Image (cartoon, rainbow, N blue to C red; front, side, top):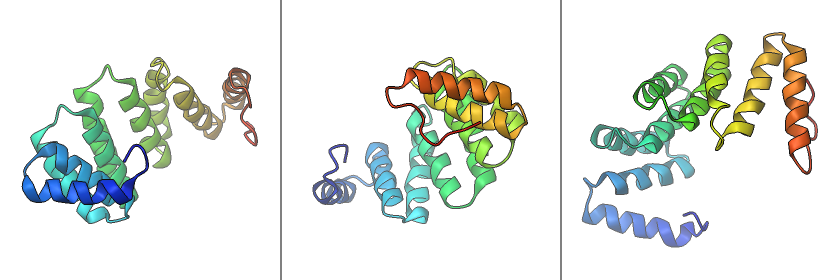
Length: 165
């Protein structure tokens, strides 16, 4: 899948699932494939199973929140990512995804808090800063938003074309 060879990997996941349908790793992959294919109810079924059996896996929480959001079950998606940050408060990637989920659901004050936590994580710093600037802009903090956008553009070789505060 990571090599974008889905024509090879999907039949392999299907075969693995037939051999071991209660394996959370396989169910996670099946849920991920179903998400990519737009089969959101099936993705939710696999990911919910996976979460019940491996709640320590960060990526399960993130993927389930994402699929709930894609399914227009926004409040449930936010609730899942909220539980994820409660379980994994040190994980900046979770704070970033939770902040994005809140941003898209117009819970801007809560998104602001989550994204401010996320920007401290090097792995998601730029993406979290971009979302933070968008939230600040929506909250009327255009000067702060502009500064973040400018800093991001200066850090990038190509800048952020088409983005204005």
